Structure formats: structure tokens, C-alpha cells
Image 1 (spheres, rainbow, N blue to C red):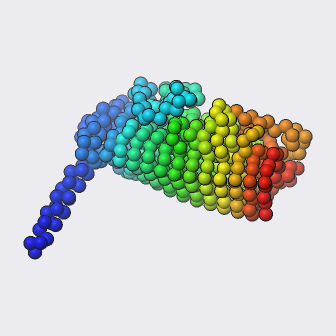
Image 2: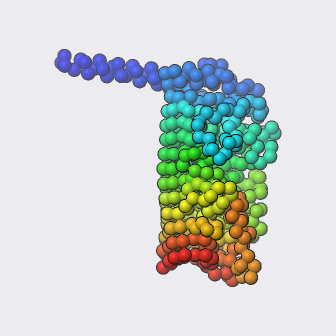
Image 3: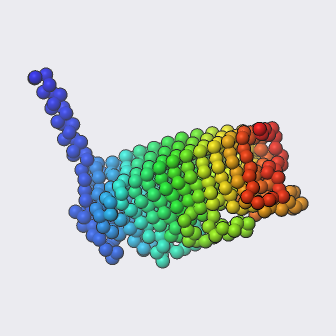
Length: 458
């Protein structure tokens, strides 16, 4: 029996070390109180600061706790119990601007970063951080002080993590940010799972913005006034190795998107098993009015929007098993040239897609003169269009290039010379079992090609 004593002692010491590491600190023990007249940022920060020394859990118990900006630090899990609600105060001064320390300033953008760095929960260069639980984080985005102009950097995001490693966000409910809901910038290793997002309180109400590498997003539900799931590229590093799967996305703008910011670019992205639909409400009420051909009062813009317009790469994108309804344009792939010389865009496979659109704007794959979108395959795709389009000389010939314009499905106007797919400045396009259907007659052809090289269809 003596031979087992060393092993038992080792196991006991390990157990003690785990217990000391996994401390649980209740914010009410640090002075946090319920009530909308209390800013609990100091109390919550005290709990986080103590917890980061050995690591562990900062617990938000049931109840409504108001707070300004708090800084999440390494080895800390913020756990919101069922019935717990962390609410942002409605006062702008409670959200100081954070200094972004990550060294990813592109040389051609000396004023970077231009993105707002205020947030309800902020983390900078932290490791092994989590936000979990069945509770809610409420950005209070409808507050009077947050009603500012589009892209106003004073408005805080709900979550902003910069240069962090091993980030885990799971099961929580996120509602009504004053800006983007969550922004992951220059992070490595981000896992988002099982969360629900409702973001209809203000302008720029994206569901999630990802500018990081080695990221998984799964089993989530998004309902947003602006872009749903958005990959952005604002720094030196590629947004790469990203998997998005098993999500339901509702939006009044783009449902799943790369861009608009696309400076380094996007590579090795897989999107699968997602349902895309219009948002439940349209609080801002502006997005669908860009397209005069839409009869629906609530409508998403593009279901899948792949945009590379700032000199960045867009390469090795695989999208499969997608169902879309309540959207204007199912597939929008755009190479543009807003400021910097374009890089290659291509090696894209989109398969097993069923989409019903509600506008005169079809799917489109477009480059610009001298720069083609190359090597794109559409396979087992069914595109159902509303119909009602008229074939005129204007729609057939005068489709503007708009090479340097802001990318979006209405950048060429409110109608294109095809009801199914518009192709221009493209090379090596393969269509396999792609079917186009109409709900009412349409004078336009299903496919319209301009400057197309090596097109195959079966």
C-alpha cells in the first residue's frame, strides 16, 4: 500500500491547487448593489482585479446591476447567473476611451485605429478570459445620450476585446448595444457558442464583428438592425481560420459578410448550416429603403456578402447548407478599389443554398476593369426571385462600375439586367446544378454576363 502514498499526496496537492485557482467572487461582496442610480463599475472592477491574481470566477448573482466600463483581465471568467442582468449606465462619461496597445497599425493608415474603443466590457491583451452563464448583458443602447450620428465613436460597444488570447463567450444573452454588439480585434483563439443577440437600439447595431484569427462561432441566434455576422479586416493581419456554423441570423442589412473594412483581407473561412432571414423589427427603418424595388417593410440586404474593396485578400472561402428568406440579394461578391490596389479575390465555393429574394436585385459576382474575381464555383443552388423586372436598354447597358464606391447590393442601382445572376469582370466561373425560379414573370434573362472569361454551366 505504501507505493500508492506518493500518488495520493500528489493528487491531493493538485486538488488544493485547483480549488485555490477556481475561486468564485460574488460582486455583492465587493459593494455592488441593485438599482438604476448606482454605477457598480468600481465594485465589479475590484472583484476582477482580485480574481486575476490567482484566476477564477467573478459571479453576477440574480438581479439588475448597472455599470460603466469594466476591464476584463487574464484568467477571469465573468459568470452571469440565471436572472442576472448587467446593464450599461445611460451616461456617456461612464465609458472612457480605452487606449489600444496592440501593435498592428498599418503604415498606410497613420490615424488607425479609427474604430471606437469605448465599451461596456473591455479587454486588452488578456489571456484565458470568458463570459458565460444564462444571464443578460444589456447595453442600454436606446438611452438618450447615445442617440448620436452614424459611426459616432463616442458610443460604446457592448464587448470589445483587443489582442487577447483564448477567449470564450458562451450561452449569455446580449441585448441593445449603443454601437456594435461585440468586437474581437487582433485576437487569437476565440470561441463563441450558444449565445443570443438582440441589437435594435441604435445605429450601427451589428451582431458580431470579427477581426481575429482561429475563431469559431456556433449555435448562436442573431437579430440585428445592422450587419448580422461581420468579418472585418482593419489591421496588418489576415482574418483567417474562421468557422461559422449552426446559426440563425436575422438582419436589416447584410446577414453574413466580409468587409466593409478589408485592408489585410480574409482567408480560410468556412460557413455552414445557417438560416438567414429578415430581422424581427426595423427600428432605424432606413436599410431597406435604399432599394426602391422592395415592397416588404422589413428586409435584409444581402444574405452572403463577400467584399474585398480596400486592397486585401479574399481567398479560400467555403459556404454550404444555407437557407435564406426575406432578403433582397442572396449572393453578393464584390472586388472593389476604394483606395488601394486590389489583391486576388477567388477560390470560393458556395453550395447547397436555397434562397428566396424579394427585390429586383439578383445575386452578383463583380470585379472591376483590370481585376477579375476568379475561380468561383456555385453548386446545388436554388435561387427563387420575385420577378416583375423589365428589360430596357438602360438596364442592359448602363450598369455603373462604381469601382471606388461603398460596397452594397444597391451600388449598381435598384435593378440589374438579370433576375438570377449578374456577372462582370470575372474569370473561371463554374455553375453546377444552379437553378433559377420566378414567382412572377420577368423580362430579364436568368444570367447576364459582361467581360466574362471561361464560364461553365451544366
